Length: 99
View 1 (spheres, helix red, strand yellow):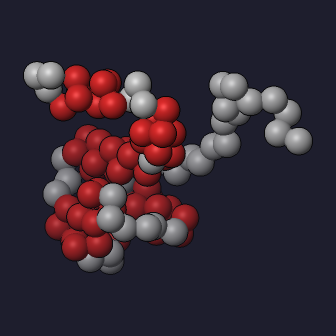
View 2: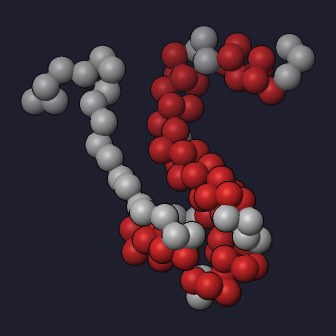
């Protein structure tokens, strides 16, 4: 195994690991979306903090995945980044009707 991705690919063969890894996907998506949006706007964490009134430490926590933002916080961040916040429920690939 040469890279982290190779290691993860190997671990994903274990069904228990795969289930737990996939359960974290929404958090990873939010973290990466925030980082990408901030960088796209050419803003530092400090600059985003100044615009939103959210501390730089809290923004850092959100980007590291150690924070648990409310929808209101995500809306404030989106507004400061001149973006819209979209939250979706998407059917699982192997899901029936959910009943």
